Length: 259
Image (cartoon, rainbow, N blue to C red; front, side, top):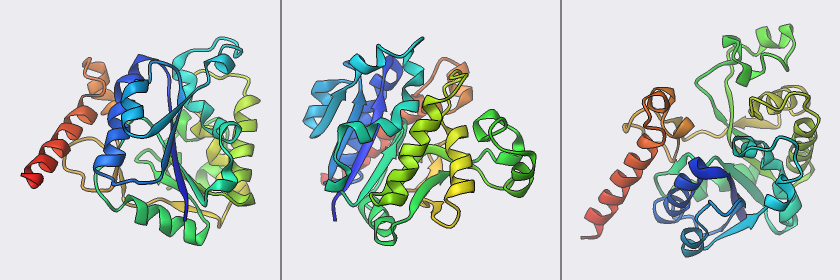
């Protein structure tokens, strides 16, 4: 089977993480399939090239977006369909730039979703019932918030089969994002959640073997250090610290094992 992982990287914040993101996929995740990054030239092109990652510079297109700013880059995830031929792959997996691969189970995890042709998303620690804007506070009905209040859906990890179900979701998500009247804050998650709950019921599930990173104790295959390590680190001026520290620990363990 043929798989593709893609990410997005715009601005200095993502640019500082995307090279480690790519290296972790190859070195710790043992990912041998294709990897693509949509972004700008701050995405460390030489470092990505060393990992066999293809950078697709889309700044000519983002320049046409009114009031464009780098933090809106994660809303361009569906653009992958403009830049690759999905028929070349059996499954597409999106990973935020602050998602760190920690072990070699990644390909088996993706293969299991591909074999069942199911959409997969990360389970969030913030739930719909909590009333946060990122969980559909303004895009779900009151009845939906009650019915699905126990769920938390994170768009930082999204996998789709390359059939009409998966590609249809990406197209619909892209259309919903393009039609937004208020694109800031830049969350794309509130527009994914209604699609999954209304149009794709029974055709999606949680990815599993993932965690929202808040410390170094997580052993899951994919650790999502949202904001590079959490709100507290961001407020303390340590944005991305947990992400970089965990990478260093994994690298040290790999060197020790090889010695």
